[in-house]
Length: 422
Image (cartoon, rainbow, N blue to C red; front, side, top):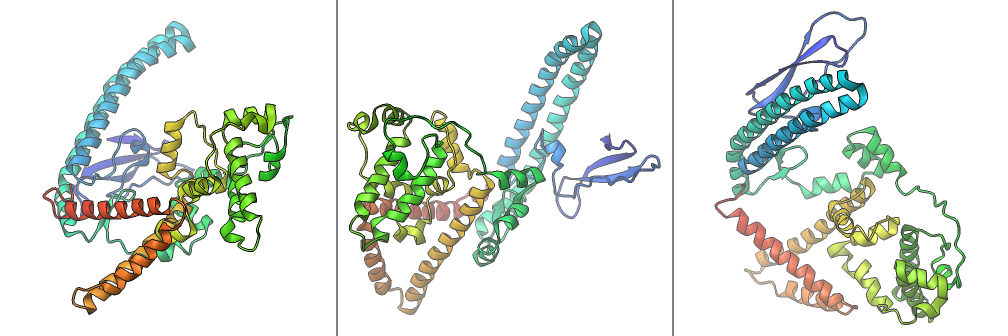
């Protein structure tokens, strides 16, 4: 299949074949058509990689196995058919709207062309994806059973994971270095740098009482994100555990929690602005210590879970529309902005290092004592008592233990199952 380059003076010939890197890979070979006074650099897609322009419409990335390949292939076929029908319907209408009768006929021609070409491309790329999936399956089964390598969803290849090597990269790189490493375009970099720099131009509101706003240190026109960030700063600063010599620390901490719970709820905030504290006296508010634990966890749990993602979002003052609850939950789970991904990456690696140290301690004791681990058991019991002594600490500890056990069962069971790698 041939296509003219943007400059119009070169042809990029895509050859589908088998090379020494990846079966069924696409390779582009530049073929000069005619000389030009302008220098042009043909876009080369290395074997084993996908074409970013084509991949924007149809997936051409190497699938992990047959299941992924068939899934990707079916999606490509569906996209091709859907876009082909769309082109046939929309193009004539748009042409008539912009160019009258002549435009309608031009649009009809373009629509019919799209109705033929797009489904064909969709089917072609779909078949290729299915083929690549089948070819990749033996390697996926082998690596899945062996269990020494992990599938990289970004680079689309198997690699041997090394925690120490990742720690050297993740824990020692600056945010600028991280952004350069993961950004695919300058736009992503600019967007990441500008996040959090929004200016609040809303006029200050007249309210009956300022107390809760003053406790958090925000103006009456503060956005939800600014209120979250203010609570994060004040709650961490005034927590009784960090102020053991201040007898008023607990009272101040309780006030901060109450102020945040009122101002972070749109309905309660509206009542408070209009009626003051009397308007929210009957509001069902949580104890500030329990509320704090739910959001931030406990410093004693840092080695096991790090700083919770919700706490990180509050620290950054990230906005969310609670009416769009599904979108908000999805943003929490997906990693959000590049800045959030940077912080989350460090959190994951730090927690993994802490867990690895505990496992090494356990394994070494078992090896040296003929399978016995009495000392480790005493350490774990004492640690659990300390963690469970905090508000809802026992619940959080149970959740961590449950997740560790279930993930281990899932990994070990899958690794030794017939479908390992698939």
